[in-house]
Length: 507
Figure 1 (tube, one colour):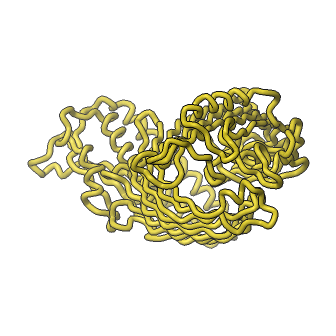
Figure 2 (cartoon, helix red, strand yellow):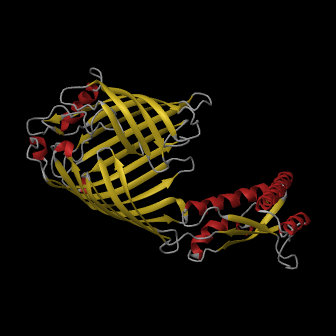
Figure 3 (cartoon, one colour):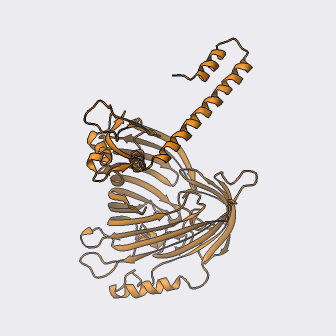
C-alpha cells in the first residue's frame, strides 16, 4: 500500500507538466522514497541490535524457486538450521548468523542467481503446534540457466588463441558441472578437455573432479612439439582455517614429436613416447586481499608429485616438489605496495620398478624458467641449461623478485591500474654427477642433489630490472614492461626492451 506521500506525488505527476518539470518531480519522488527506505533499514538494524539475545526457534526453512535442484541436496544444507535438529536454543543473533551461513553456502555452488533473498516470518498463531518463539525462514533462490557457451580470443606472451567453452550446470540436481573446452592457437596448437565436477555431501568446499584431455603444444624454445593425451581425477577441500588442499591421480601419455631440423641431441634423445602415472598433492594458504593485484597479505603454496614409484608404473619415476611464497606490504593508505616473492623446486630421480638405477629426467618433466610471468627480462625458458639452440630445462631452480606498485597520477588508487618497478632473478641447474648416458648409482643421488642445491648460491643469479604498466582484470593480470637484463650466463637468452605478459600467477 502506498504512503500518503507517494499518493500525493503520483497525483501531481498525472497533471500536464513540461518534461523538465516532470523529471524534476520524478527525481524528488525517488529521493524521498530512498530516504524512507534508508530510515526503515536503519530502524530494522536498530531493532535487531536491541533484541540480539531474544530467544527464537526456527520451525521451518523453505527454499523457493529451486525447481531443478534435488530436495535431498538442499536438505543437507538447511536441516541443521531447524531448532528440532539442535540441542541448544537460538538467540536472534545466532539464528541470523546461521541463516547467513546457509545462504552463503548456497551462493558458492554457483547454480543460483545472486543475491539470494532471505525473508523471516512468524508462523500462523492459530496453529497449536507453534510456539511464540517460532520463526519461518524463506530463501528466494532463483536458479541460473542450465548452460553457458563462451567464445573468444586470448593473447599472451608469444601466444594467441581462439577458444570455445561450454558449461552445463546442475546436471543431476546436485550442483554438478560438466565443462567442455576447445581451443586452437599459435603455441598451444590445439587443446580439448571434458571435465565433470561435483560437490560431496552438499559441501561447496569438498569436491571431486574427473577430467579427460588432449593437447598439442609447440615448444619452440626446445625445437619440438609435445602431444598429451590422458586424464586425471582429484579431490579438493577447504579447511576451516582457509587452507586449500588437492589430492589427485593422473595418467598421461606424452609424445615429443615434430622435431626441428636443428634439434639438439638432448631433445632427440627424449623424442618419442612416454607414459607418466603419478599422484599429486597441492596445498595453498592464500591470505592476500586481491590475488591479481594484492595490497596486503601473503601466499604460501606447495605442489608435490610422485611418479612411477611402486604400483604407479609408467616409464618415468621421480619425486618433484615446488614451493612458492609471496608477501604484499602497503605503504599506509597511499595505494603504494611492495610485493616480494620466492619460488623453488627440485626433481629427484627414482628407479623404475624392478630396477636399481635412477633414470635421467626427461625434458617433459624438467623445470623451465624465464619469461614474462616469472623472471622478466628473459625470453621464455631463457634461463638454465641449453644444448645448442634448445632450452632443455633443469632439475633444481630458485627464483625471486620484488616490485613496487604505484597508482597512476590522476587515475587514483582504487582502480586496477598500477605502475610498477621491479627486479627479479633466478638460477636453473641440471642434476650433477651423471655419466655420459645420464645415469648414476642410486646411492649417489642424494649427495649429488646436495651438491646441486649448494651450487645455486655460486655467483650472482641471472637477473633483470625494469618498469611497466599493470592491469588486474578479474580473470587475469596483464603487464607491459620494459626490461633490462643485468646478469646473464653463457647460452641464456635475455630480452631487452618491451614485453607483454598475461597470466594469473606472477613472480
